[in-house]
Length: 252
Ligand SMILES: [Zn+2]
Picture 1 (cartoon, protein in one colour):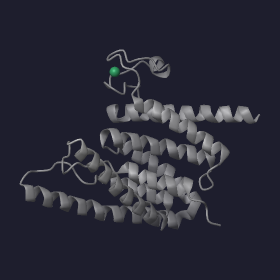
Picture 2 (cartoon, rainbow, N blue to C red):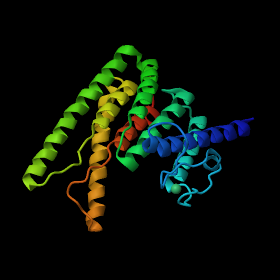
Picture 3 (cartoon, helix red, strand yellow):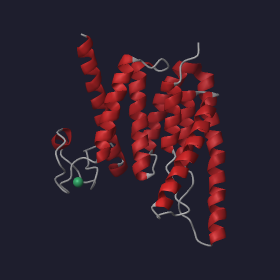
């Protein structure tokens, strides 16, 4: 019985990983959940070929490396949930949450984009889980706080970019923070509540700083350094929320 339920959990994790991959392949390319597309050339794939993990008929490539990483991460996460159910959101809440987190994480990393469709889903998922965890008031205040704090950072980032482009006398089209990050911060505010969202944002800013530091260092070492490259921020926001929801112990 134990073995069966472990096997079922792993399968559930793989199904969720598959769905996350499907969202990450299809949503940025077509904007909706229709026919699956190839992760490389974004041409349509037959549903059967997609399900059977067959190579793409157009470019001949197999799934991107990300596909297998996501698969592995979700199988491991499902087993972790099985052995140690998330106390704050429960097993089902946890599984739905990581599917949402993973989709936003991958799409932002690959396209530097936070889509409206995933944000709408996130509002529903995080609004519901947040309301169950902290009640309506704390959930609402968390969202408001997350939105306002990130909005200030967004404008500061814009000022900084403008200052930099004036100083160098060349336009910079990349933004330090996108408005999608502000919306994501609103959504994570729903989930983490007030004052939880402040901890989530502090973590994201610190991790983001560390991440950019490492990125600049690696690029300098490989001599590819450009002094202004926007890094996707959603992964850091999501990492902070993941630690707060799944890793930190619940205080009685
Ligand atoms: Zn292809």
